[in-house]
Each structure stands twice: as structure tokens, then as C-alpha cells.
Image (cartoon, rainbow, N blue to C red; front, side, top):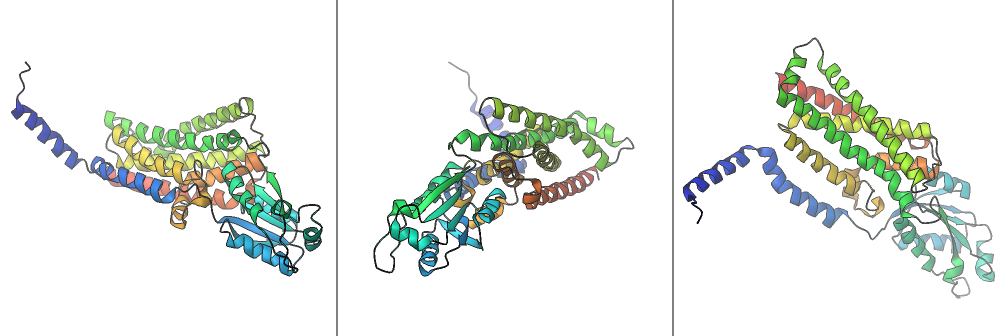
Length: 367
């Protein structure tokens, strides 16, 4: 029979409890992680997509065409945010990622309704995300009453045009997004753990005693990881092309420009984490705490448009949200950086803010 001393066990139990109480970060994670998970999955994640951003080109401008727009808006599938004149303008908005759906109502809309020989209007859909495509296609069930009181056939009301992913392959949508997910996880983790490891080994203090300035030290630390991040981007792109036949419709230089600023933003976040973490384990904990909302709220796994407004506002703070728009816009839609400068600006501002915070925190710790 084992010789067990409950006194010694109680002493160890007391020691571990006190250690956990002193470790505020781990204590916070114990409570914070379940709360965050419940909020994200229970409140923010919604696969029932509604309120897709849409634009309308009403070339008919009749009572029935206006009724069609009202009925589409009333379905709650669409939020019509603008009006244009041509299908080409709708396509440009789709390319830039400003809308998900366009409604094109031609000049002879009412004649088409009466003759029923062809669809009366067109739905132009960003089909890169199959979930968005499925939600938008539900609009084909709308019926209209004309002046005589007869009802149009739903099958003749809309012609659906699916852009960017005509074959509806999930890999075409998922694989480009994996670039952002993998870079987020590896860049933040590598940087945070590397800096903390240097501190634990005493090497950081040796560097501090040299003439190297704080900003120079941090920049020198992250440059090798920028190269590593670009190598990862290249590897994933090659796998996307060779194994999954993902088309690269945009300029490769735009892909790397977007990736460069995104990698830098994540490395700066890793530096910030390293100034808070006291051990490598804490650095990994904090990295996961940042990574979880990024992957769930950015639009990688679940449709961004299906999330409540509060979750969307939070997602706008995360670098992955903006990079996914950029990388999918460039690769799938053939868009250029100029069409999506807002997302580039957002990444640049995030990188600057986190760099300033990391330098300030680092100096404070030295003092």
C-alpha cells in the first residue's frame, strides 16, 4: 500500500494555489478563456447570413422595379448601400470588396416580366464564399405582382451570375485565407517566445548594455522573421497553385506588398506580448488568446456579414480581417492594392501603434 502523507499533499496543494494566485495572467486566462469562447460562439458566430452589402443599378426606374428593390431589402438578406447606373459599376464594387451582391434591372424590365421568355433582372454575386452565394440565391424566390395583379414566376425573375468561384470549390475560398491564419499564428508566437526566451537566458540584458537603442534592437529582432513570413507565404501560394488549382488573378507583387505589411503588423503584436509575458508559457497563452478571436471573427471560418454589428466593429481592429479582404481580393477577384487602400492603411496603423506600445513597454520594464 502506498505511503501517502496528506499533510505533504496539502502543503503542495497550498503552494500551487498560492502560485496561481500570484500569476495574475494565468488566473485571468482561467476565467477569460471560457467567457471569450462562449461570447464568440454564442453571440458573434452566425451562419444564418443576413444583411449582405448590396448595390442596385435600376435602369428601368419604374414602379415595379422600385418594388423589386423594396422587396429585396425587406427580405433582410440584403442591405442596399448604394445605387449605380451600369452592371460594370456593380462589378467594380464587387472587385473592390465594397459589396457582396448587385442587382441589375434592365431598361426592358417590365416587358421581360410580361413575356417571361428570359429572366427579368440579374443578381451579380460575390461567389468566392459559398455561404454568401447560398444566402444571396434565396432572393430568387421573390415574387412580384404586376399592374394586372398576376404573379411573376420566381424562376424567371433573376438570372444569377456567380463571380470569382464559378465551380463553387471551397478550397478556392479557404486556401488563400490560410496564408493569413498561418502567418498570424507563427509570426506572433515566434516573436513573443523568442524575446521572452532571450530574457529568461539573460541574453537580453547583455544586448541592453550595448550601444544599441530599444527601437534598433526590436527592428533587428523582427527582420529575420519577416523573411521567414515571406517564405511561408511563398510556400502556401505554391501549394495553392499546384495542389488546389487556386487561380492567381491579381498581381503577385500586390500579394507580397499586402503580406509584408501584414507580417510586420503581427510581429509588432508579438513584441507587445513579449513585454507582458514573464515566461514562454505565458507568451503562448497570450498568443492563443489573440489568435482565437482573429480566426473566428475575421471571416476566415464564418461569414463576416452574418455577425452582429458589435462583433464586426471588434473584427475591424484585428489585422487578419483586413488581410483576408486583401488576399482574397487580389487572388480571387484580380483587384489591386489601390482598390483596397483602406485595408492597407488599417494594417499600417496597427503596425505603428503596436510598435510604439512595444517600445514604450520595453523602456518601462528596463526602468
